[in-house]
Image (cartoon, rainbow, N blue to C red):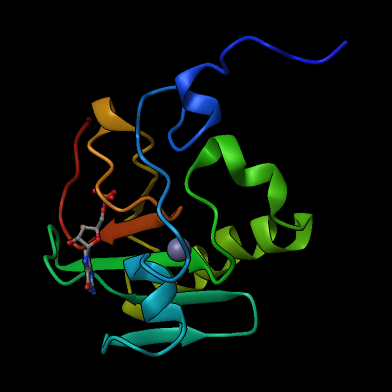
Length: 135
Ligand code: 5GP
Ligand code: ZN
């Protein structure tokens, strides 16, 4: 039978939290991945890019992103398994390169409104060089 009802709002242009979908053309991290915006790159490979956060909250504050656009953890299944593994390996390598492995560091994903996610392209914050508490 043909569907005659209304799709829930999040099925159209926004997700379950009411966050608007951003196109790859407009996404700031896609632009960074395409080299259209200048950043301080610290690690560059086929599927994963790492660059310094423009507004660092710790002596070491690097963002690690998949080049492929996924908005958040709800979409992480769209990434090949190998890319998800590389996100963690690159985070560890970036921390080692920055000299914070011994002291320890945080790898944080802000996912959605309550976590304060501002850029809707999945990214991991790698932060170290000072004592970091929760949250
Ligand atoms: P979120 O709050 O979404 O987890 O984190 C987004 C992060 O991206 C913020 O820490 C912010 O400082 C960083 N950011 C936003 N725009 C840019 C940019 O154009 N360049 C760089 N290097 N970082 C950015
Ligand atoms: Zn993107």
